[in-house]
Image (tube, rainbow, N blue to C red; front, side):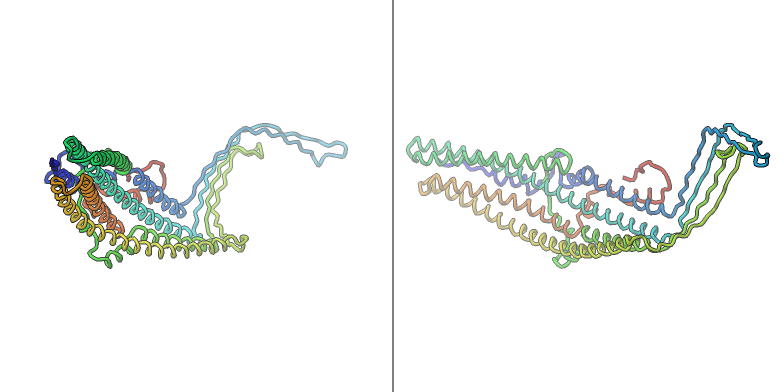
Length: 471
């Protein structure tokens, strides 16, 4: 009795990964998932908030150029009693006089201080803060790449696991049919009880594989929800993004070591560390400041006879550091050591970027070759299964041979699905390795987050606690 043939494997692969002519309206594409992740991913939004917080370092450094003004008012009740001796009185006839009373003195004043020179510390702190802002933007760019790569990986993992689950379920259907036919042949004496047991064992194994595939699918769906921020719909097959990557390995290495966010971040960290040395050295320079003060008094706490008075002053102060215990010299040495560390970090970042590019390039080449190999494997397994079934029908093959051929075909189709997933993910991994994985390069059509908007809003702000809307 011939086993019914079902071309379900090819159909599943075609629907899952090989593309469709027209996706339904409710289907979700990889580009749409990347847009959702770019807009809604909480870790990415948290990093954007961190950049906005770093922007405030520039405003705080610029405050060193601005005056500091304070006002104070003092008032209350004062009681005074003074007894004096008349020194001109004759001996034994001293005369004492007492002056007593109370008043309500009030004192109001305003003080303004402006630093004219502090060893260029304010200028260097401002440039250091600007380097920190640029470094924070590169950290954000690296986070964007990581989120987009994680989103593409989560999308393709779910697409792969969906296809594998469908393959395993259809495999169980075939094994159930195989078991039914084996039992029919056993009833008529064509096969033995051993053949039935083998078919039952393989069916149980197939059901176990379905359970494993379901668990993998649920895990991938949960990861998809975490990374992209929404429940998955019907996923549409995705295409590789090789067209956005350099054409050869040498160009890819050059791009990765020059423009990857971790490399540019390390460069800005070197700039910030160099300016930190200059800030520390500024402590050895003299400081010049000017202070203006105006104080108005109504009544007095010292004399009941004073009705009002005022005092105004404009004073300059020059402070020349001579020796402060050596702490400033230690800070300079410490800053120089940190600068050396940052320069070494830059070399390390370039080496890591080069290694990542080469590794990603190799994985992409392997993924391309693996697709061709697994496609050939699927074709050969299909031919072998058909041949084994025909030979089993005429008694030249056993039931176990058919079951083994069926399992080899399922394994080959699972390998092909996995290879197609690896092909797409590897192309995104290479694009991230060279520092080009961004919505602009991918053409996602989503407004890019511009960190410069918030920076310009708060850079020269002199006062105010309202958070601007440049988010």
